Structures are given as C-alpha cells and as structure tokens.
Image 1 (cartoon, rainbow, N blue to C red):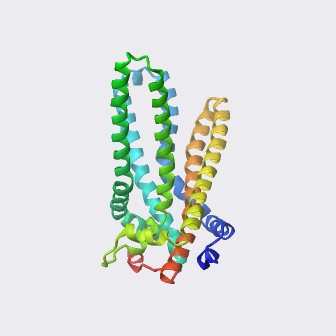
Image 2 (image 1 turned 90 degrees about the vertical axis):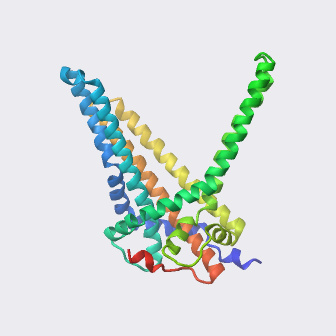
Image 3 (image 1 turned 60 degrees about the horizontal axis):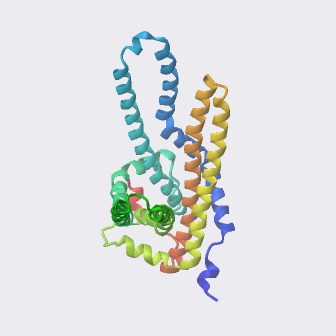
Length: 314
C-alpha cells in the first residue's frame, strides 16, 4: 500500500483546520471587507441621495455632463482603490496562514504592512503567472475561434445563409468552447494551488528558482489524490459562495420591493455581503490548500515548513 496515500491529510482534518482559522480570523475578515468596500458603499449611498436631489433640483439638472463626468471619476477612483486593497488583502490572507504555521505572531498592522511592501513584487509574480498559464492558451483558443468564424462565414455565404447544419455545428462549437474555458479555469486554479505559497517561501532568495519545476514536483506528490482533494475543496468553496450570493440577492430583492431607504440598505448589504462571502470562502480555501502544501513539502523535502525571514524583515 502506498505510504504517501496513507499520510495524505483527509477531508475531516482539513475542514477542522479551516474551521479553526476562520473562527480565529472572522473579525479581521469582516474588518478587511469593510476596508475594501467602503468607497463602493459610500458611492451607492451617494447615488441614491443624489438621485433624489437631482430629480428635485433644477440647478443640478442643468449640468448633466458635469454630473456624469463626476460620477465616472468617482467610479474609477473607487474601482482603483478596491483593486489595490483587494489584491493587498489577497497577499495578507496567505501571510496569515503561512505566519501561523511559521509560529510568527503577527498583528493585523504588521501583516498589512508586509502585504503592502510585497504589492509590486506580487503584481509582477501574478502577471508572469497570467502570461505563462492563461494568456498563451487564451490566444490559441482565440485563433481557433477566429478561424472557425471565418470558415463558418464562408460556408454560410456559399449556401446563401440557408445551411441549418452549419448553424447547429457552430452552436455546438460555442458550447464546447465555453465548457473548455470553465473546465480549464478549474484545472489551472488547482494546478497553481501552491504558487502563492512558493512565492512567499522564496521571496528575497538569491538562489535560482524555477516556479514551474517546483510546482510540478510538489504536484507529483500523491498526484491523483491531492489533485482531487484540491479540486473538490475549490469547487466546494465556490459553491458555498454562490449559495450565499443567492441568499443575499434574495434578501436584497425583498428589501427593494419596499422602496425608499430599504432599497438603498438592501443594495449596501448585497455589496458588503457578497464581498464578505468571497473573502471568507477564499480564506478557507487558502487554508485548505496550505494543509496539502505542507503534506507535499513533507513528502518531498522531509519538512513541512520553511520559514522565510525575508518576509518578516519587511
């Protein structure tokens, strides 16, 4: 019997660890969610208030271009702020988990400051990941789709647009492409599940490091079992988030029927609730994947943890 399979962490052990981390970080998760969403919440509240003022004020109604430009500027500023803070928090969530097992008791201010200092290095890292694993396949599929469209157009013109068979094949092809992107997205998320941890564990290292080779070596540990667990945990996290979004959406729809302030409150709750749900489920999934990462390191290097002091010197 394969010893690696016996030593692999089971779902019960993983979920227990996830529950512990979520319980310890629930207040911090809600606090960070508010930090991310507050400009959007203010913008939504402002839209409702200004809408009433706009409808009742002839002065504001005389400057539609100014009001529209101001609205776009505020939206762009809120979007930029949300991206920066959300990405910084993505780094911090991984630091929370890594520092816990590194036995480093970081305060929220310390973990946030480290995340901010890692921001540009992490951006470069994620751009490299996107270029290597997402952009190339996307370009390949786009070229295939464009060739298909050109062929379909030529065939349609040749038959004077009367070929129902061509339309049927085109529809099936479209469905196949959508399924491919959906499946490939989950495959990549599972394949790259250790990338963030490798980034943190090797940051500031002067030794040569090949991310793809290292990920392949770790992924080969208990390959089928570990991949299946990672995939199921990711799908489970996404499903939990989707169900929460449906529930929050239903509450918002009900409050919208009341009109007035209730409609605004429903919109605010939906934005904050959806973001909180996303942050909670992603943090849970990060914790779960880290348990599998520790197991892979244990089997490959005979050590579960590597403490990168370069991170904590930040």
